[in-house]
Every structure is written in structure tokens, then in C-alpha cells.
Amino acid sequence: MDALLQKQRDFFHTGATLPVSARVTYLKKLQAAIRQQQDELCRVLYLDLGKSPTEAYMCEIGMCLEEIAYFLKHLPKLARDKTVKTAMSNFPAKSIIRPEPRGNVLIISPWNYPFLLSVEPLIDAVAAGNTVVLKPSAYSPHTSQAVRQLLQTVFPEEYVAVVTGGRQENQHLLSQPFDYIFFTGSTAVGKEVLRRAAENLTP
Image 1 (tube, helix red, strand yellow):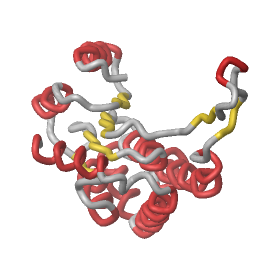
Image 2: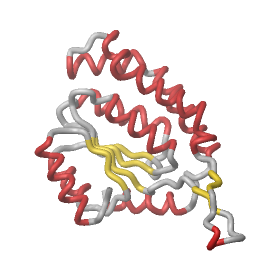
Image 3: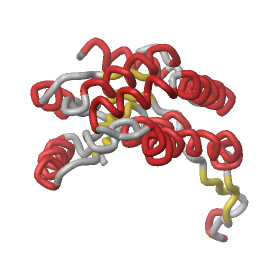
Image 4: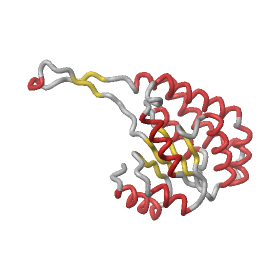
């Protein structure tokens, strides 16, 4: 796991995730992979949670596809530099706001919406130009494995990687200096995530 995280940090520092064209390319690949694997995703969501194909699509798969469609349409504008007013004291300087990625992002997702709350924040993180380590819930094992296989067909592990397991893996990941953590889950676990994130000043 330590070697994987270092590999992701090194990959981010090459600048490979920065071009908008590269982000769009990977979002399109992910979109195609989700559509291709839709039946399998419905199957595993039924095995883990008893969700019908209609519910699986409406509440999880379809929402992820909508998220990708949004970024494919708007990402070039969202990533563009924005010129803002410059204070007279700084004349003749020019001021801009430049959106930049955080770096290496950790996503910890829950069991009750295991596809949506794993893949949707992943879409956002990739669209913003980050690398991602995704830690899905151990309580939705079929979906977690399907998500892992899906993402392995789209991304090299130095870009996006899935770490499965339970509490021990969570603890090790939370000890690492990630640049951003996206967590969805219980209040009790959230407090622990916040405490561990604070040790590294991780938002």
C-alpha cells in the first residue's frame, strides 16, 4: 500500500493529470465502461442490497453517468483561468484565479450506496485533476469487487486504485498524508476520520 501511494504521488507530480484533454479522455473511458458493465453492476447491487435493476440505475448508476455528462460538457469552462480585478496598489499587475487539483485524494465510501458514493466522488476528483485511492466498504463485497474490476479496466493504478479490506486497511490509509479526504458514513467513524485527517492538516 505504501508503494502504491508513493507511485500515485510521483504520477501526480509529473503533471499527467493536469491537461483538461487527458481528464476528458479518462471520463469518456469511464462512461463507456459503466455502460458496458451496467448489467453486472445491477447484479452485484442486488446481491449486496437487494436492489432491483430499476433502483440500481435510478439511484446509483444513472446518477454517475449524469455526473460524467455534466463534466464532459462543462469541464473546459470550470478549469479555465478567471481574470479578476487587481487592487490599485498592485498596478500594473494582472490577477487571475487558477483552479488547481489538490493532489492525491482518498475516498472512503459506505455500504448503502456502494456504487454511487464510490464512483461519483471519484468522477469529481478525476475531473479536478487528482489521483485517487478509493476504499469501498467491506459490507458490500460484491459491489466493491465489481467497482475494483471496472476501474482497473479504465485507469492505471498510479492514477486510480481501489484498496479493499476492513478496519485495518482504513487505519493504515488514514495514517497517510493525503491531500484531500472524501468520507461518507456514520458520525462515529466520521469523527475518527476527522481526527486522523487533522494530524496531517488534511481537508
